[in-house]
Amino acid sequence: MKYTLDELNVLIAEKILGHIVSRNKRGGWSLGEPEYHDEYGAMELQNPLPNYLYDIQAAWSVAERLASKGAAVRVSNKSQMNDYWWCYIEIYKDDQPISISQGNTISEAICLAAIQTVGVEVNLIGLM
Image 1 (cartoon, rainbow, N blue to C red):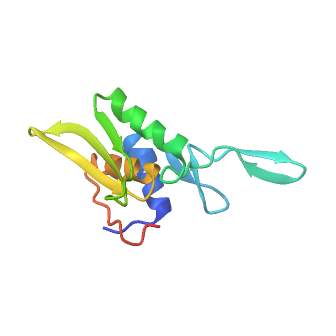
Image 2: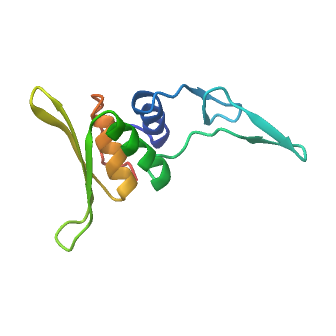
Image 3: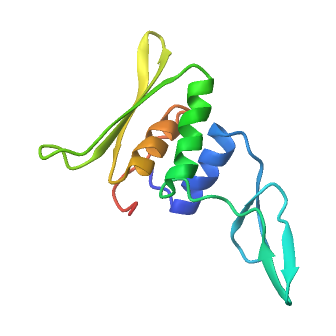
């Protein structure tokens, strides 16, 4: 299935990290209830949904969460023979590893493999 970037970020936050995600006044997404800070008359969102697929720090929090649940998370880099980053997440179900994915960035590879661990199949075409 094909998802938008926002939809994938919401799925990761809810299904992998266990966050509650909600819409904010501006149509974006927030972790929990939207919290705003009014500085100089401009309402600034304090808890926006991270962009897990493109922010390595946010993506690494996904890898750490899976590792804390007993998963082995391995990332391999691009090479001259391989145009993508790969992420292998070894969580065994019926004696089979259930998630291997590739991405154009480390973050994308981690997140696409992670979302597969909860049964969400992602169409990579058109993601970038």
